Image (tube, rainbow over all chains, first blue to last red):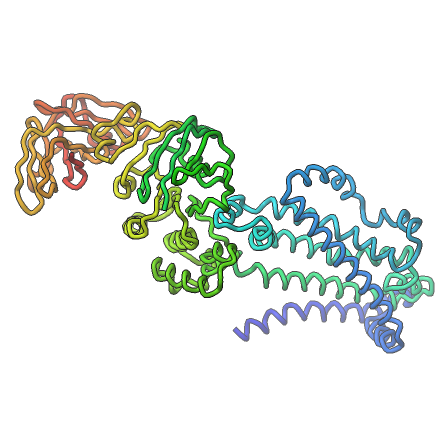
Amino acid sequence: MKKNKNFYLLWEVVPLLIFFGLWEVTSRINLFPEKIFFPPFSQVVREFWYLSISGVLGPNLLSSLIRVLIGFFLGSFSGLLIGIIMGWNEKIDKALSPVISLLYPIPALGWLPLLMLWFGIGEILPILIIFICSFFPILYNTLTGIKNVNKNYIYAAKILGSSDIRIIYTIVLPLALPYIFTGLKLEAGMAWRVILAAEMVAIPTGIGALMMKAESLLRIDIIIVCLIILGVVCLSFEKIFILLENKFTAKWR
Amino acid sequence: MASIRLENVSKYVCKKVNLEVRDRELIVLLGPNGAGKTTLLNIIAGLVDYEGSVFFDQKRIDQFSPQQRRVGYLFQEINLFPHLKVVDNIIYSLRAQHRPVNEIKKRMDELISMMKLENLLYHYPKELSGGEKQRVALARALANHPQILLLDEPMNNLDYQTSKHLRIEFKMMQKKLGITTIYVTHNFYEAQEMADRMVIINQGKIEQIGSYEEIFFHPQGAVNKFIGSPNVLECNEYRDLGLGVGEVKCGDISLLVFGEGKRISKILILPEDIYLTNFQPPGPDINRIKGRLKKIEELSSSMICCTVTTRELSLKARLSREVFNSMRLKLDDEVWLILAPRKLKFY
């Protein structure tokens, strides 16, 4: 068993090491003419260290993180709530569906110019963008999840004397969880992609803004540091939801 | 407990159905697929809107929601909540009604020992076998002391041994609890074994109500075809041989039956329970009849019905086309029929 675990670890780590090694070597042997456009891996690591201790990276990452967390939480929560209401009540579903079908396909970033004019450039703007980006997909996934719950479970619960509210939180929501988690997993990564774009275009702080500043100073090493950090953060967010999903649904599915 | 009365109830295929189930009675609703059996159960449970009236103990309950009807319902698909452990499934109704914790605990212990679920409490439904699921579902349905129990083909997905065992257990439990029960099935043997009375339903219409003897020996209308057009033999003579075995004479043949000293006037056997061969079967000459093949009918692409006559009697036997072809039978051939004593029903 232990041997097996080491074996898989090896298979995950070795390709990464090879990748970083090749990167370092190609840059050092001047395979590309202008070294400034392709800094070696070691320089990126050094820059990462420098940005961390000089207090540039931390605050920028934190402000992006806070925006994502607030927007994502509010968006998911509202999406979940309205999804439940629409999933449970056919009349409300029928009434809201046309509006939502119209708004859902608009890319979250498409709202940016409008929201800039309405709310100005400030902390509320990125949070609103993330809210929009999370709200619709979670709503749709919750709605689909609830509609896919086998009606017979609801009948069974009714006959067992359960009230409608109790049926929702003891039967319908738990059974819709796999769908809801699919939405959360997708949106956890998507929220980061959207905040990055928003910060690059319209907001002066955050990891996206840091990248734009680095671009204007031709600091490719900083850009690469930001990209790697973004990759790690997106992956971690998705992993958190995979872990939560397993915890809540793996035992009975 | 309670009696049930349906008055001119209509929904989907069911048209103006009237039915009365007595208090503590176990009634079996027997009919082909699509006959409206499940619809009737859903009407009684209040799961669908319907026309007409339903009474529990002479009290009209049409305005009652499923939650208020206090019915135990065992669904055909079982429908245990997949995300809840066995124990949480069982006490779901008690929690939903906000019963005190010590009462829940006491009821749970009763159900666990009644349904023999001691080792399964902390399993999820997906980890249970078909029979175990059925037991858990029954415990769940009984938890809240329902006044009426509805069972929709509960043995459908079980192997023969398990279902036989469960049926016996269930019948004993029903008599002990005295709970009024409607049991839906399309299987005659199951119906015969379980029923106080049988209700034959076809295309949403009740064709006949009665004991299994009444249904089998005096089938009305379409019931005869539905129960498989059994052979009915009039008995002229009965002789008790002791030890629960009797000999009856029907026309020119004599048969041994496990009759336990009862007077027998009619014998009934289904065509599929008669074995037909084209050679004299080895072994003791009991319940074997020699006759001539007089008619060959195709029932379906795979089943053949053969009519065999003796000097005074005519019997129908059903066999698969494969077996029939392998014997290369022609009209007027001499054949033997074997009537297994245990398959004979008598009246």
